[in-house]
Image (cartoon, rainbow, N blue to C red; front, side, top):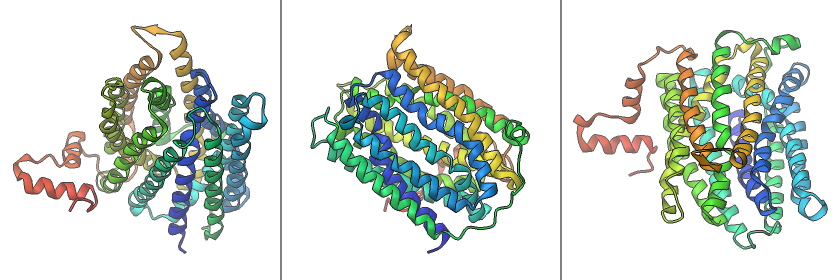
Length: 433
């Protein structure tokens, strides 16, 4: 099996694992009586872990084989799902223990990011990186969607406040994660280019194109994470969805991502990452506002809103990841990726805790989750403007944003209906016949 196939298979198993565990962790905490502040803390744990592990993770790849670093720490972190699923049955304060062990899960996962990202960059030719990343993204979306829906069907068999269904589902997800980790033992690791031992000072010194990209990421991630953990709360509590409909609604966004991701990969390879990133991130600013028009009486609107969310996040996620990989200096890629994640993590830690506090203590015309949805929307839009200062790293000419938007949307009304049908087929990758 080739390296690319191993990476793609690993991504598929990881997505199935994530769809059965982390995606339902908020629902698990709510079933145990967690408050919005606790939900905010859970949302912050992955980024606290990233903050603590980026420098150690990039140091490890300078001393040890990247494949071994990935396998050891990923396996260790995923085993901590066992005490999480057992928490309601063996601990007196299960929510506190879930927060602690979820942090340990994420410590194991995030310390592998410099190893994984640099292996990915070294194994995939630069000219095909957009296409490969979109294929990887489609696999993650597909298997994540399937596991989400199956998870919702599974939980429907149990009372809404029962932890038993969650525990069994988390155990199965953890087993898939272990399989995903073992698959990586088959990788043929390329030589690592950066064996210079960087000082702590180097990790904390931003320069070049990465400094502008990091500034954008810090501000956008704060805006995004201010509201992100509370979409699940809004659906499950405010709109009173059952777990099955929650799974279907979440899967709708993933289906849109699957359909769009291949097209986004082609767009980034053709026009560069920067214009697609600007369009995608501006699009994400509309998602929280659209959620506010959904009520219990028109709850069906969640499906088109989630489809829109999937489309814009597909563009945002793929292009942003490409920008990070392509902007990093190949001679010190691990250090710069770690630096990028380190600074971004600060915003990602502060934002969900701030969001949780705002929902329970502040009234500015609005209150609760609707308040942070509006704030997040405004901040997402403003932070997206910082992308105009980021240089296109792919070496392509910088196209006009309006031109790229028209080409991406294939806005050519003078060419008629037949042309429009042809374009739909191209975007859906042949799904529409």
